[in-house]
Image (tube, rainbow, N blue to C red):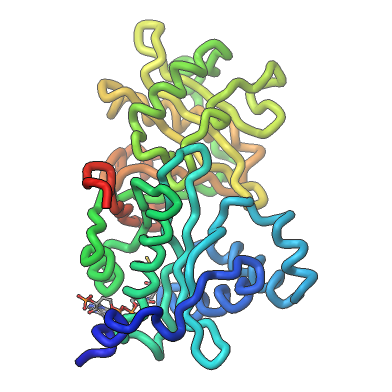
Length: 328
Ligand SMILES: CC(C)(COP(=O)(O)OP(=O)(O)OC[C@H]1O[C@@H](n2cnc3c(N)ncnc32)[C@H](O)[C@@H]1OP(=O)(O)O)[C@@H](O)C(=O)NCCC(=O)NCCS
């Protein structure tokens, strides 16, 4: 009998317990650092550094953390503990503003404890918890060639929704983009509803990958110039006077970091990417140290490489969808 079968039969599983969000921060950060063989991305590294520092600060860190970590970020989940150390974790976040949508993240088991059913126990418990919280859709992202993880998720009924590539651009002082102003223009304040409606149509799953789709991303700048107070700006690519493509520039948490959100009507594909990207890059030239944009894998590759973007990683988004299933 395998260890996995033993765990399936014994309830509750011995080392499994609910995540204590602040107290477990240091232990979870250490586990993630040693569990991901290819390392984590820049955003992940920043998050881990913050979690480790807050974890090291003990009670002070637990008190400060709620002030600096977004209230919804990885607020729930499970850990697996062995001899007082966290050797497994799965975190759950509700997508803000999208009732019923949850994200599963940080699924990791210490290399010395793998193939014993711990990963599956963490994922199954998180799925049960998500269901109790009213989840109808549970999303996660994974490297498509991460066979153990993909196998684990597929066995739990997750299906791949999309594969998305993160592209990054590092502006140079000489990067200029003549001609962009003729084909694009700033979005008018009155156009935000239309922009928001397109975002909802293109992203029924409730995410502008990887962030929650929220009207605040698309609302107007309030007459304070294109970048407004919060540092968000929008431009459109009109065809015969009507916007058919939209780009939004938003600050990321990183110093000098910006993220673009590109939304195109189907007929604008192949025509709007280049002028919109050039517009955004030109406008960000003196503000940005790094600009990222995430798009479905294989879409607009030549337009992005043509503008100097480099593909950093492609991740699969998988979903466990309970919407069509009868109530348990
Ligand atoms: C993915 C991971 C969490 C699995 O944890 P685990 O405790 O070893 O998994 P389990 O023992 O519960 O196995 C779960 C299933 O995955 C399968 N599996 C686990 N490792 C596997 C491997 N190396 N190759 C193929 N299948 C594998 C098991 O056979 C089992 O399948 P079954 O339910 O059909 O028997 C672990 O490998 C890990 O931490 N990897 C590094 C971090 C990572 O990539 N996390 C995923 C991020 S999206």
